[in-house]
Image 1 (tube, rainbow, N blue to C red):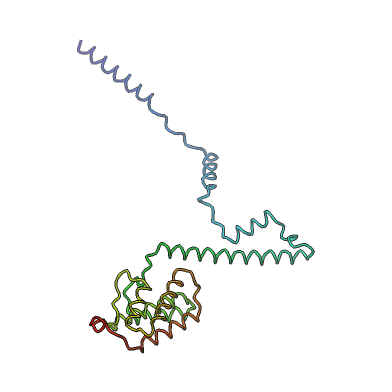
Image 2 (cartoon, rainbow, N blue to C red):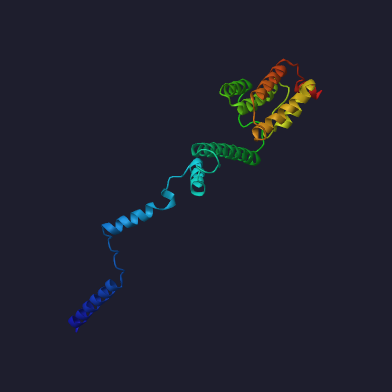
Length: 231
């Protein structure tokens, strides 16, 4: 009986193993070369692998698809019509780029913290940064850094005390207390700082020259220090 039981157990084990083998999912077939090529082409056709077109390319493709540049302007030679279309398209691209840049600056301004300082550079370093920006034609940075230098210099002279979270207008109000005769110019400078920083005004050399002159006047002006003002 023992031998028969062992034989029956072995047979049952073989049946279970065969059933498990039949129930297992079949291994996926290896694709042939043609199928592999088709899959690769389908994958590479996805948008993620396509090179992004430039704005100019998109506009010019739209013009080609919807207009014939040779006859857009009637009663002129074809070459002149094409030239006019190219010039107008270039103007459109420049206008769009300027508009997008302005929107981006305004958006950063709205989500920004509105603070005057974002680092602890001293007034000399700020002046150097302003001069370097002016030398490269970056008038916005020149105006911004020069106003910061004015306020930081007053802090270094003990006339005001800047603090974390201070805005340009708050700094101008404090500076006006120290240099009352220049109150109007300091408030104007704070307004210029905000307008340039948040994209409401495109800075020009004249604004930087005015801010530079204001900085010279502030440097020469006698100030009321904090201790004296507190008495």
